[in-house]
Length: 188
Image (tube, rainbow, N blue to C red; front, side):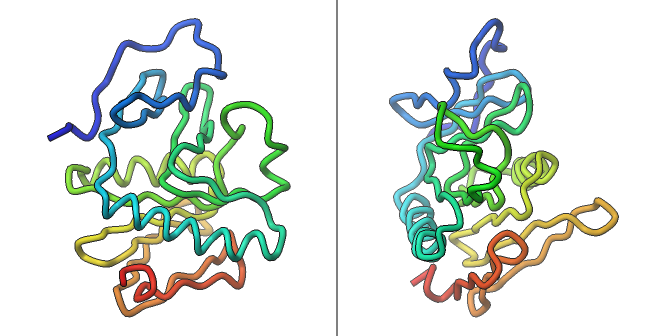
């Protein structure tokens, strides 16, 4: 079994254009100046991430709101941090074009499908990193429990987490007003 992450040598004199390369066995993120290799997703997690991206694409493209990325879409969250969420939405205004290998900032919405090997601390760190970099919302999807935790910033700068159960419906607010996704459709 792959470990969730493995730290490698810190990057030195590496251009940002290297961000987003994939290794043969999985992917990596650039986290606080270190390459963090992620194990390949399980088949179920990969299918759920693709299903979410599909629902997002249908909504976003019809309204010409921006761009939806899959698991190889990179976002530079800081000078030494690039993350590759399982799916994401970034508005046209924030995207700044489609040049380069990573978007120059956080997505409006980041989606992470959580594997069994990820600790609660790993999940919290991911959500906080996206929100601190300017994301409006983060969805962390738990396939076994069939729930999604929705992270947002509170008015005082703290973090709000709402858990949506299998019979609930995700809302795109504030990142995608009007978007809804019944979890029954996701976990079918």
